[in-house]
Image 1 (cartoon, each protein chain N blue to C red):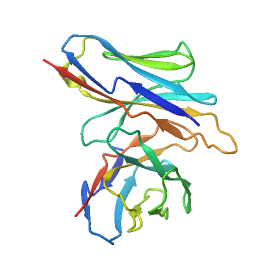
Image 2: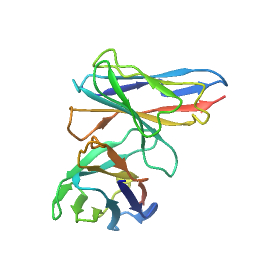
Image 3: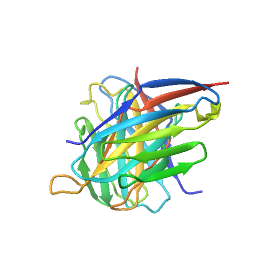
Length: 112
Length: 114
């Protein structure tokens, strides 16, 4: 079945450490997105990519980085510069220029 | 700036007790309004897209409606398996400053008890 796979499901970060969240899709979608979800808040866009080797900052990109070397993959790195990284991270994809977006099952990141 | 407000924040229903969730929005031209269902620890699951005022969509016990300022998600005779958080999102028109990103509300958490 086609879908979006996020891994790991749970991740713990130590102080000063960078961590990378994986997102893979087999839907043949060009567009991919990373969101952050905090309790009581709507999903907030971190980064998005509409094509391989190209990506744009969303509303809260500071402290995060991404790459898009393959159409199927859009990993997110949470750097040590992100001072409040504890959250539920969601990856999504869509047909280019179209909605809706389809989501993976998320990665929950916590601080040790 | 596009804004989405969902109410109530939480809703507790008895099985069979119908109710409605509200999604109020402000957007500079609506391209689409989207409803998602999210179970605990899972990603949002797409339910409906609405494009213009007066439009309605149905799926099992769920019915979504749209006006120029808000959308309602009606849950008719809910069952415990309808318990979830329901998210609303809007997409505005694409401009030189906006690529038509989704703006999400905070969601309504629905609990249906037997």
